[in-house]
Structure formats: structure tokens, C-alpha cells
Image (cartoon, rainbow, N blue to C red; front, side):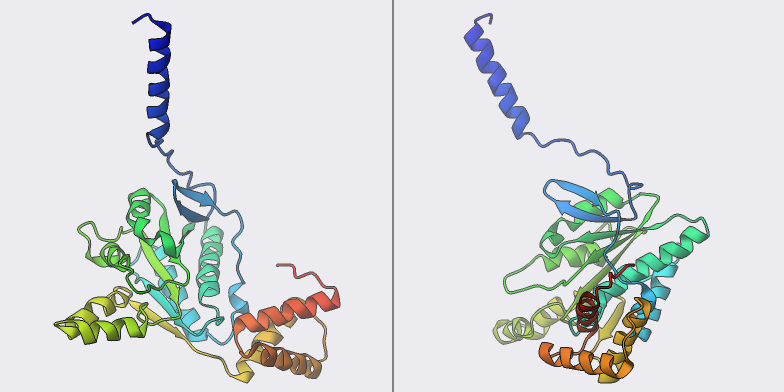
Length: 290
């Protein structure tokens, strides 16, 4: 046992085993920020010091969805019953911006009242299968969490939606009392229509097969629809941005340029209005300060 070569061999073996063994993850510092991004490999929560978002008053044309989501979020932050929310519909209409703005607005009010902040955790679509691990970390925490997944949808041969269903409502542990799930999607049922139609045409019990897939969206108590905006709503968004950032432009010229911009994009939406304002501010030499 004193042979130097043998001791060196054992040392190399021990070092190799230590490298292969998974490191014990340190408990996350949930006081580091009010927002985090979940990374699955290795599993950890990355603090986000400043959330990239838009102030709630600047979100125009989605008043009903804004009010419903704000009320739901305020109830949840106060420890009252609240629902998972699915924000679905037209692209660029402020679905993800509304989630981040609602979180920010609720925390402003809670900070003014010296109450504990609400935490926002973003999970990427490709990491949905690791949602149970994330739930295990936040379960039992004194904080309350919005788990947020942007652009959630599932394609053919993707079965990860089953684990999401179990975590949201159907699992033996269920959703932790201090967690709520918000998701945005262009699809109301999160699955492509042809995927459901294929199930209907090939399954022995087509109705049951479709119901099993559609039931995923049923886990969301709130369905908030976002639809393409009218020309007047689009111009209202442009006016609100221009006024907020102090862009002094003749209203007729502003509307003319905004409509021309929307034509080149082939769409009228909140995102298009914001992109136009960025272009306008750049041409005017104005910095867009929050």
C-alpha cells in the first residue's frame, strides 16, 4: 500500500470519481433580486437585477386583460386564492410585457406598504420538463412566486406537456401554495391544430385523445385573449409612447409615419408601435429613458 505508483493510481481514481459526482447545489439566495431566470443544467436560479419590461400605464388596447391579470396577481401576492393564467393570441400585443408589468406594479405597491416582494421566475420552454425540480426549490419558501414561461407551445412527438399538466394540478404533491404559473402562447390550446386532428383521425377513441391534449389548457383558470388591434388602438399606443418619452412631433406627421411603418411591417400591434418609437427616437437623437 506504500507503493508510490499505486497511491498515485488511487488518487487519480478518487479525483475522477469526484469530478463525475454531481456537485451539491448551494441553496439560492432569493433575496438577491425580485426576478430570476431558471437554468436547468446545472440547476440554479440566476438573479435578474433589472427586468426588461414596459411600465403598466404604457400598455394600451388591452385594458380588460390588464385589469383581470392585475387583480389575480394582487390576490396571489396577498396570500389569497388565485388562478394560473394563460395569455394567448396575436403576436406582439403585449402578452409577456403585461406579465412583467403586472409583477412590477404589484411590487411597487407592496414596497410602498413595506410588504414582502413577489418573486418572478422565468423558465424557458425547453426546460419545462425540469419544472418539478424548480417547484421543489421554491416549495416551502416564505416568498411567493410567479413561474413565467413565454411562448409556451408543444410540437409533434413532444410529451413534456404531460409533466406540466401534473405539476399544475394533477400530481400527488400538486402546485405549491406559494406558486402560480403564468404562460403566454400564440395557441389557445398550446398544441398545433393538426396535432389534435391527427389524434382524432388515428386514435381508437378520438374524442378521448383530443380531450387528453386539450385538458392541458384547462389547468389555467384564466384564459386572457389578445387580438389584433384596430388602427385607432395602434395610434393610441404610438401617442402614449411619444408622450411618455417626450417626443415632440406634429400629431398628423406622427400618425402618418406610424401608419406607414405598420404597412411596411404588415401588422398593427403594440410591438410594432414600440419599434416605430425606437426608430423615431433614434432619428430625433433622443434617448429612451425609463
